[in-house]
Picture 1 (cartoon, rainbow, N blue to C red):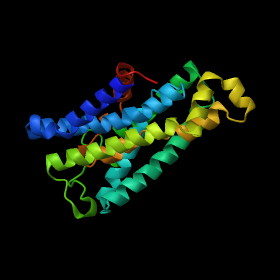
Picture 2: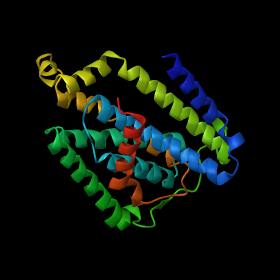
Picture 3: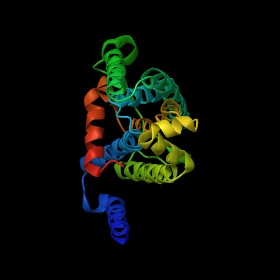
Length: 248
């Protein structure tokens, strides 16, 4: 256990000092993108690792959150309002996802989520009047929380790092909570959990909503948003990241 905490401390120290030993705006921006996609992967890890529900359509929800943020910014709302509205939209979209996909398990669940993700990707790609198609949505400014500008690459990196660490802490608390134990129970002993009133569908609806915060944060850095954010390859990459890191 001590070795695990030591490795965690080294990783946090490396992330905290990254702008000092990795110079160049390009590399700092890439590190920021890695962090908010890691937030996305954290949410997917809860769904796949703890709930045992392999979703191949999570990128579609990521795209819904990102587009909602972009539209709110284009309408002239501030970044805090845009993020809050985007998260509400993503919860509604996830509830619709869950209502359709959690009617099945195993291969059936995987295929339903894949189909739903491809539908959202197709809408983002073809509905040009709404999404902009290949051109996407243009986002002109980065956020300025509490009046502190994040236009500088280093400032935005540290803001993203704080959100990432808070996300890790929140998920660590969640998976150790009674609700997290119920989630793991629906994965390991679904029949017993059904007898206790905790069905797989109910647990999935509660927990499958996690994982879209990265889109709302990450969009603030991007100069534009295009349909690629909702592609299947996006969620496949995050699944691969989770496998390499070790799904719980």
